[in-house]
Every structure is written in structure tokens, then in C-alpha cells.
Length: 191
Image (cartoon, rainbow, N blue to C red; front, top):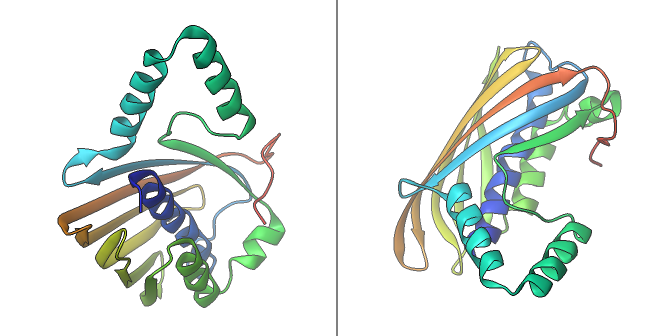
């Protein structure tokens, strides 16, 4: 599993945990949300490393190829790895988020080779644990806690300890979601 694929699976893991918040109080407000994520692997900021590598690769290309690559990435919706993402939470999305077991199954789909179990949910906090066994990627244990700070803010911390391709791997993902506006504008709900 490449670092990029591993990062995407981890970010999906973070994003997929948000739906279980419908079981907690207070419930998140509908509208446009911003999520900021910081991921470190063995103490290194992976998003920053990926951005630096992508910038170096783009700079090494001749101007014509650089323009073609930038256009191709734009057409595919790919760009520099970002710490910030936006998501639209509408009434249907909130209703879909009511089943924590469904959310765990969704997490397992986004992170093949991983099994997750909810360990606690109540009040403003959700906790889970999991085990991943991916011979080409991360193999180890994952734990996470997500807390609603109010209807317009949540925080999460996920840690993983194991190995990747035979090398020790300590992963830490810190995420903060905050409500931006009642209207989602051009951002469409995910289905």
C-alpha cells in the first residue's frame, strides 16, 4: 500500500467516524463543515511531506509537462494534499449517520483489512478500537476518540501502532471539525 493510499484510507477513517456523532449529544448542526486534519507517522507530518514531494516533482518537469500535469490533476479533482476539507451535512446525511454499526462497516470498506468495534458511546464522546492486517500496508491496532464540543465543533484523536512493510509504524491523526454556515453553497452532500 503506498503512503498516499494509506493516507487516504486513514483520512477516510477520520471522516467516517463523524457519522456516529448522531448518537451523541449535542447533534451537529446542518450545513457546511470544515475539517482540519494533521497526520503524523513516526513523528513526521505526512501531509507536509507529500506536498513537498509533489512540489519537487512538479518543479522538475519542463514547463509544458508541468502545465499538462497540473491540468490533468485538476481534471481528476486531485491537487496538493490538504489538511483542510469541506463537507455538507444535510438532513438526509444526518439521518443516515444514526447507525454507528453502519458507520463502522463503512470504515471497514474504506480501510480494507481493518475491523472496527465501538467501545463506548454516550454523552458527547464516541470511542472505538480496531485491528488492521494489510500485508502491503499497515498492520496493527487502532484506537480513537471523538468528542462533540458543541453543535458546531468536534475533535478527534486516532492512534495506530504496528508496522508497515516490516517497519515499525506509529500513526497519530488529530482532526477538528467546525461548522461554517447553514448554506453549503457549491459543496454537495456525500452519498
